[in-house]
Image 1 (cartoon, one colour):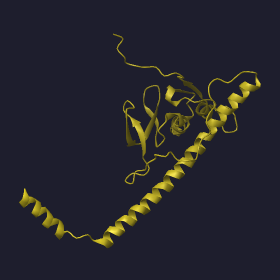
Image 2 (tube, rainbow, N blue to C red):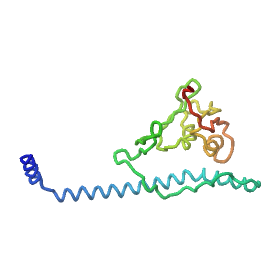
Image 3 (cartoon, one colour):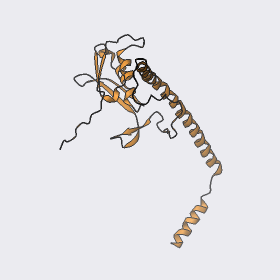
Length: 199
């Protein structure tokens, strides 16, 4: 063992530290961290802007309840914040991807959120990939991704509870000016467990 220790010491003595190369590596790392911080701050601003419409809709609904003499239930909606999460992250090898819950929601992975729109024969008529971890933001963009060849034939959209929000349904059923699009959204509004053995 003493002989091995002496060999290890001799090897370390031969390996000299290249100070200019080490400084260059550290400067690159600091620059990459500054860039990552800017990306994280920009994403927080974009997310806040995307959530602003839904926040306004919730706030307007509560105000309408107050004006009708009803007391709104539960706590009021929290306004979207442009301040990044204190523990955000970015991936240097795939910066467009995001950390998302995976599998049964017990762990996280660096991923994308893929969506497919299918017709009644389960043929794919539209598809898209996004970085939104929550499907509530995916309804309108996924409907918009339906091929123009069949888009005019779409009169009804069926979605599960993960896609449902009042703002998302309104975005599909109405134009930005408030006119009806002719498309009706049918959505489950409660989450139910599936495939569980009753015994």
